[in-house]
Length: 350
Image (cartoon, rainbow, N blue to C red):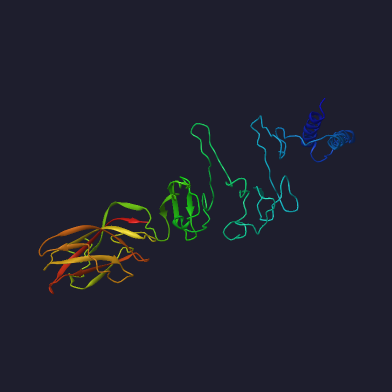
């Protein structure tokens, strides 16, 4: 019989006997224990004489550098229980349980593991730098398959912020589908790959679209129905009338969209901008209304123009202050400019 095959058989038999016997119990005969010991000794002797390590069989630990086949539904598990009692694998110097890398040496000072505040230890970590440019690759080849599935109690996936925005990475190649979270926390998606240049053709950079970030408005969330959040008319003329009276030329009102209106809070905390319908009604002279965030001065713009004794409405998008407030300002050439103001919230950006 082939020596390697014999070793594999003895190893399987030894594992079976260990599982069968376990810890010595009352009633276990001395002869039975000697049988287990003899099998183990025989396996050790043949292993010393034999050549290469054997590949893992079903239920055994896997062997690196060998073909490891699983022909049953049993899983091959590599696990670690404690620093003083490792089974299968111990944490590397970066705190990861299993680290796969193409580096000759790798320790806690190697990026990105040098910043443990943003890259915590992982059960499995992949670090590709030289031969393998991809740290971890997942491919689902079956019908209706996924390349990867992630679940976590804090988040499904964390994209560690790193590097400049794609537009500033002039020396970096970009591939269609690249997802970049730059050092500012802005999230970018590559929609067109970069192309290398040659003697006759100039190189072209990749094309990225910003999906989110500290300076991005975020996604538009439409309310089920518009909410009237502000109305300067008296209560008898409007269910939410605040009786503030008409807004005069160069005057400003603060619109608090974070406050509840009839039990409804139209804009949640954290909203960056709003989509509103701005209305001027019962104006007494030609003029305009301007809408802007409450934490800045009037930028010199306008959102609608109105005439006397008319109702004029216009859609407007405006950033809101951190506490969810807007300012509305009236202006015009005539000193008698006065108008009621209505603000209906249609949606918000978050």
